[in-house]
Image (cartoon, rainbow, N blue to C red; front, side, top):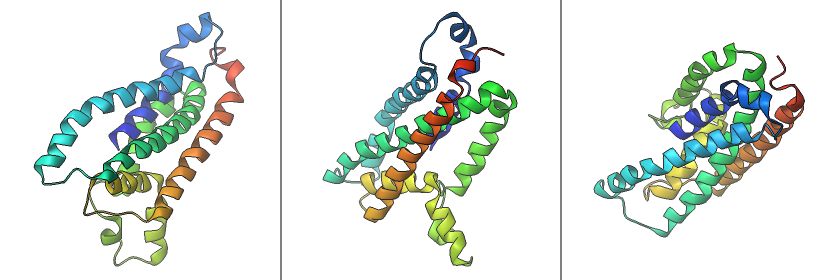
Length: 188
């Protein structure tokens, strides 16, 4: 989830952070939030050097399902690019978005089941609460990465479909929203 949080935060502030470049040169502005996400992906790659030995030390065997980790990361990164484009557009026009965003992302993390099982947590709640929390993209992305790396955890195939849907939807909407105001970035 750290990859998601850092990618969206970095992408959201990318236009304001590089405003001098935006004003000086004409280039596709979408490069800035997308490159911010790729920068966070590289940093995430470095953390894998710690995560993999920890998985092995906790008794997790290396299985063929580990190969699913790469499509899972691709799905998450695609989602992050879309969300970064959307929030970069909002933050370019409203300075406070970048200040409020970390609090929203933290609340989203807690609602995504990073520290608990959503199904176990919502045991006494109405069914719709469980459904809403399970359809939360953060929870879905955690499920597919756990499915890939943890032998004791398996996610149904529909979860992968939902994950891909969230990723593609986020990217398309984020790109269209960002692109609709591309000429105005750096004007104010």
